[in-house]
Amino acid sequence: QVELVESGGGSVQAGGSLRLSCVASGFTYSRNCMGWFRQAPGKEREGVGSINTGDHFKYYADSVQGRFTISLDSAKNTVYLEMNRLVPEDTAMYYCAAVPGACGGYWSRPARYNFWGQGTQVTVSS
Image 1: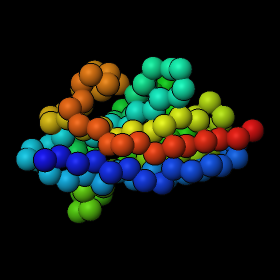
Image 2 (image 1 turned 180 degrees about the vertical axis):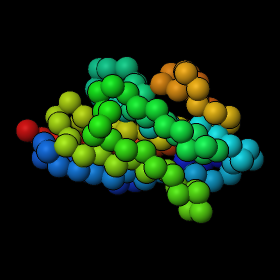
Image 3 (image 1 turned 45 degrees about the vertical axis):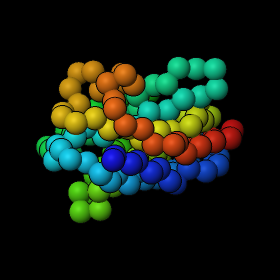
């Protein structure tokens, strides 16, 4: 059974940084797409970025490009989301997600993913 557990959320001031972690377990496939999504109150869930566990190719939403970085520690089965220069608009619940296979062009669509974590809250104050 696949399990994703996020951690690292919190409250920061604008301009600050946070690093989210997602520990994955139970995968039967060696190559997966690991994604980060976020959802603010009253808004749809949106893709932040994803990474292929096979070739480490990464995808980013335009809104976070250059500020957020996804990385993978295969030995620890952990995906990280390093978030820098945070702005109040980044405030949301952040979710880790996974699906077997490569991410591909549909990486930002929540319906693409089979497995989800419980989420971790990120709050950025101005």
